[in-house]
Length: 180
Image (cartoon, rainbow, N blue to C red; front, side):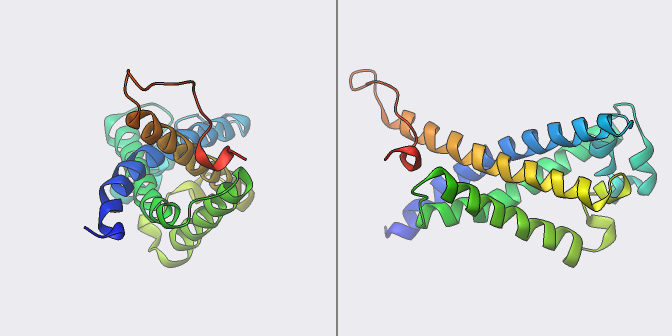
C-alpha cells in the first residue's frame, strides 16, 4: 500500500474529530454572538435548517427537532465535509508550528466561506446571513478557523496517544507541530 492510500483511513478519522470540534466551537461562537445582539441563542443554529424550513427558521428561538436538530446536524455535516480536505492537506503537509496550523485553518475557513456564500445556492447557505451582518459572519468563520485548528490538534493528540501502550506509555507530549 502506498503512502497516499495508507493515509486515507487516518484522514477520515481525523476529519470527523476535527469537524466535530469545529462545529462545536463555531456553534458556541454563533450562540454567543446571537445573545450579544439580543437574539435567541439558538437562532443561528435554527437558521441553518432554512434549507428545509425556509427563511422563517431564523426567527425560531426555542429548541425544536425540526429546526435545532436539523440545523445542528446540517452544520456538523458541513464542518466534517470541510475538515476532510483540511486534514488531507495536513496529512501531506504537516504544520511545523502553531502559526502555520492557524494559517492553514484560516485558508480552509476562507475557502468554506467563499463557497458557502459565493458558489452555493441561497437555499443551501449556512443561513447566518438571515441574522448577522457581514461582520458577524466573519466572526463565525474566525471561530470556525479556531475550531479547525483545535480539532486538528485534538486529532493529532488522539493519534499519538493511540500509538502508546500501557507498557510503553511515557510522559504526555505536545502535538508534533508544537515541538521545537
